Image (cartoon, rainbow, N blue to C red):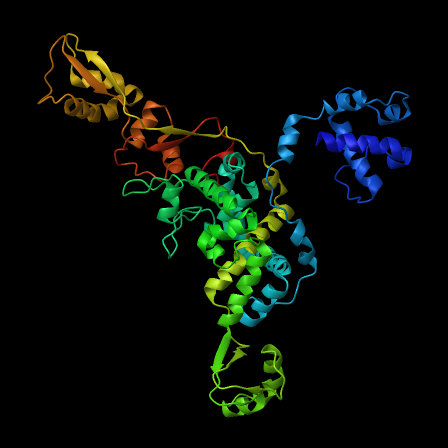
Length: 493
């Protein structure tokens, strides 16, 4: 960033006053001329200068020394540099296909396979724009999309922070929209939660999944696991498109479609097209030597397909085909298999979501990341030594340690004190030393002892059974700061 502005200022001096027509130049204005680029960068420097820098004074100055440039560069905030260095997932390379779509029918195997083979990037752009238009123009689909955004919004700053911290483009968090509509759904294959984790993948990324706890059901914990998984996949493929596809089909599902030395989104989609093309072919084993026309006649294939099959199999009409040779016959009417359609449209659906957000929800895309809304508390067993005083009872001792939960929690605390100290009954004597386990063991106890709203805590922690005791290591999500209505879970705005 600093080098970029420095070069821009030096260019300005060399190009002259014509390079800058106004200090009120809007950096967001699209002007791709050389002078326009310079003006944009200088305007950026001017915007962040706090010492009243005037480009005209600078230009006319006889002392255009590098120290003056460095003085200006000092005003560029480090936070802005950090922002620009964040990993991003750009729509730029697909944008031209949004307006100039290539002809294809995603439901027809032959049509989709040809598009994937001949123009992978164009296919992604076309599928993305088709999906974005479908979301925008279908009333029911759009209403569902809007509801998904409402469910996501309270968690959005925190999840953005989680992804950014993991070095993952925050745009990838929107996978959850087409994975689950940001609900705790369960797929036919057994994937669970907002980020649709299978048990093995979730546990590999640190989630606790057992009979009593399923952290896939918690958006904060699941987001951490999703960011971890995507970062790991990027480490393998060095491509966010492939990391996204591998999140869907697994790393092996991507690897087997690619040469290990050619990891790229284009190659993956072209390979997918070849796979689809092969599946949409009938393979006819020739029994007797003959020309293509003779073989078609023997197998009752319409003569009208002669030229098509000659080109498809790279043959000439007079060539003699040998017995045992394979003739490939494409099925022009075959529907695209659902599993391959799912793979082909997975990354484009993420692109479509970003298109809709960019157009209709710019505030969502631009909402800053923040880790200030939620905290993660971990249950850890705690005990305290207590020496019994005169007139003490187990109930009285338990009530002290149960704090704000005295009435509802004291009974369970008494039971725990007796078990921990192996007491046969409620009798205790003055001077007796007992250990008091005072860790909250249920979500309700935790809420009362920490003075939190139990109903809100339940909504935040759907991965926990509120009626079961919580083992050590259980993670509880809490609010760290007061919430605006929009950032309150369950907001119905």
